[in-house]
Amino acid sequence: MEIREITDKNTWENFLSGCSEKTFLQSWHWGEFSQNMGEKIWRLGIFDQNELIAMALTEKKMSKRGTFLLVPHGPVTKSATPELKAKILDALTKRLKPLASEEKISFIRINPIWERNPENDGLFKDFRLAPLQMHPESSWKLDITLPEENLLAEMRKTTRYLIKQAQKNQSIRISQSHDFADVERFSQFHNQVSRKQHFVPFSLEYLQKEFQAFEKDDAVRLFFGYYNNEVAAGSFVIFWSGIGFYHHAISLPQYAKFSLPYLLQWEAIKEAKRRGCHLYDFWGFVDPQKQPRHPWAGPTLFKMGFGGQADEYVKTRDLVLSPQYWLTYFLEKLRKAKRRL
Image 1: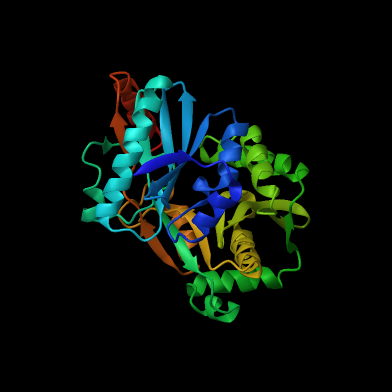
Image 2: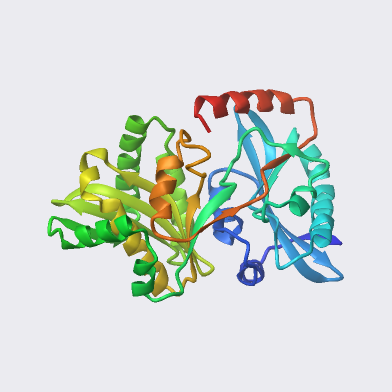
């Protein structure tokens, strides 16, 4: 196998369009976003006898807890046997090790969205389980190819009722925006919610640059839910490669009894359908029955009400390259415990 850098956007996106297991974290746009955030990236194509069989957007992450290479939700392959995946992983590792040495990297982190099963778990013999996931290791997904009435019929009864009640309430309205100026407004409410719910929000710069990267191809929308013309809820949704992704959300607790997030989510799903998407990805998922105290348990119950199913990916893995890794390991274990993740 041979690995080459891909410099053509069409080559990159055309390959991904034929892959079923993918997220926007491997998109061309996400690479641009990472570069705009000051990170080095490498768009690597893996070839077998001159045929492109896999891709791996790789980012250099520099933080207080350590410097490492990250392959977010990658590598991405078309349908592949465990044997072929093992060869792809081996080829990628051999390419990244010297790169890590050049960049003074202490470890390589990888989390492909390959199905979590014994065969795929067994591919990571040289890796260890990461102490902290960078991106979701499981996600709640909904097939939206059915007509709207069928989607409504398959929702949890309470979810369907709350959507209809919100639709009847004349004090409620939903809008969507592709105006860059609205990102700052979204960020202000995001910060407000984070202070009340005790989580670390994404910075305004992060949200703005993510929006800019996807807005070039009209691939992002901000949704706002209003009660009496006051913002009560919002979402930041990416539409890429036939999938809608519910990436960021805000919901102000003082408006909770009006159930705006349900109608807001339904409007985003309908927008994804209008764009020809076949899937709606609600993003992170935890099993509320197994982890009832996890910070994502409540949001997951909300997502599950719309119907769909969970996709669980192989756990995030680290390839240790330097003793410096263990400082990162210790710091991330503390961070995980503090956040109850």
